[in-house]
Image (cartoon, rainbow, N blue to C red):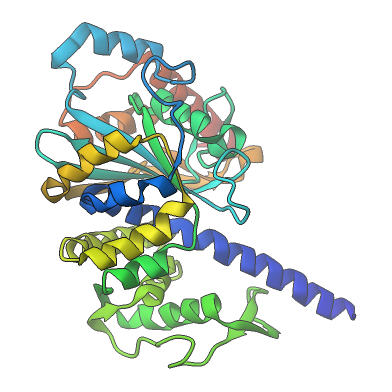
Length: 382
């Protein structure tokens, strides 16, 4: 085999790995819909879920900031997080069904449910956020799960964001296309600029390498329009199928990577509307596709409780963390997203989730904020 051909094959394998990782970016968001809208079908299918009961209050591995826990006990019923259920949602790149440590989280999300009103708010923690990953090591946020599985990832979120997360769900990739198809697609306003990239991503997901590479050194792919995929041919509001919606979520060359996250949230909102109208058979299809790839701390009893109130849940807000940020290379951590003022971002987060505009952070958060600022000055000079 020629050297040129070997290089082409290596590039092809790397590109395929990237495609697999990107497939996860939205699949866990479908899981949110299932938790909210699954009704009693969740109970029927719950035997397919891999249960993990380590994250229960009082357990040895629960990781809530000691100072925060003391504040919660002192405030009692007046504590501003009282009445909220905060859940960590992780999406991992795993091709061997490993949903534990050793795999990086391509997606990190917090779903906060107001158990009195049914309002749900979603927060995406940018995977490249420079942060204490739960062991006094500063790295990208997605390194926490790889280092210590959901235990360490939740420790990172609780310690650095002053949260009280005790439950989580982790999903593998591959579920998105079937999930969107199961709810009959989503209505999205596609722009002229997005069409080319949307179709290109469709081809890369279903096509085969043609032996050539593009200007970025990535393999080009071929796929038959109308057979392998259905191209989007015009701008405007239109119903996208699963493959098209997945491709839309992956667009990163129109705007920034942060705008790609906005596209994902747009699809989620539209999926929520569609999911409320889905038939039992469609919901059944989603559960069949997603739940075998789920690892969660929820018990069947808890799922029954959430399912019984499914119709009352509504997504009322979403945001990305951090909001005020810069990007740059942070030493061995590589290119990161850096909060300009980490402590202020945590206060903003609590205001968004719990309406507490005067929240005072713990010393743990202030320590993280100081370290992030010091490292930013050292590596970026500002």
